Image: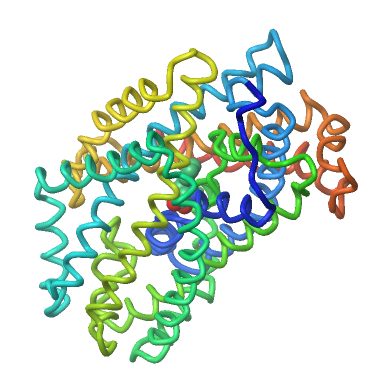
Length: 454
Ligand code: PHE
């Protein structure tokens, strides 16, 4: 099987593909939304610590597992420790992939529609009108479900049709275009009235927020989600990484790109948001970017085109992420159950579509669970909380234990240092993956679980 797996042509090709998976709605939709709900700069601070101290070491671990085993996640864990139950970590990833995809494709569907809305000038009007437009649009069940189906269908077609290489070539052009547009929008946002207030909110931490345990679980979950970690996606990507390519430097590039794009998104949303009178970042929920950005576009000459270009780039960034999300369950059924690719793609896509229906229907902040203590969420937010804040960190916790204590530091270092690859501080990495990652994750998710039930 190893013979026809294929590898990435170059290190840059690998980095772009992995960054294509990482950079997506998580950065541009998820990060500002979470910052808004977490109270601003305090969230940003905790997020950055999570990325550096917990996620980066685990990313190195996931890539090492994949490159060593050259298999999809379930097979990789089984190959490194045969006869044990560690393959279950891969299986958890398969479920998490499907769960994330189920709400991700709903939001991705919104971005497709917003390309059209921006282009045809439907996002005009005062803030009230823009907010109502979003609420009415997302309350339209048939539109939401059709767009979700469209997005999942395109993702499935890419996995089936072998146009993957084409998509990856597009990613090469996409990434710089996206960053250039984000820089331009951040520049414009900084000059709006109210921008200073937005920047203060984004950059100056209110330390009292640090007392809230849910801030830590959201920041950790967001970091895992944004880096496509904790569900085997990066194990899969690592399995395509050539033996001569340095794992640590590739991981560093992915983290740098992903974090820069997320931070940049905040530099656009908060200054623009605070230029709107009465703006409350904590109450916007999943609609934050869809209600704040149209106003920013309206302040630019040719705003309709900027708006359409923005949502188009976001759609493409989301597509390179959904491809990697769907790939994990699909490659599992192909590698471990012997299904052909077509059957696996159709089965997983249909299952995800079913699962996505409640998210597609129950948006617009319908408080489905308002009668339960501690849970006052619409279904889509509930899904993202369950999968991002809990399933991904649990997957990451188990991966850290596997890498640091089961496979063992010596085994991993052999993989990491092969061909004299760059890896500056192996001792520090070993300490982080053995101690800080597992204890940090536990210290964050245990109080969060307890606070739901208290
Ligand atoms: N990282 C992607 C994003 O930020 C989402 C994703 C999560 C992709 C997990 C793959 C695996 O949009």
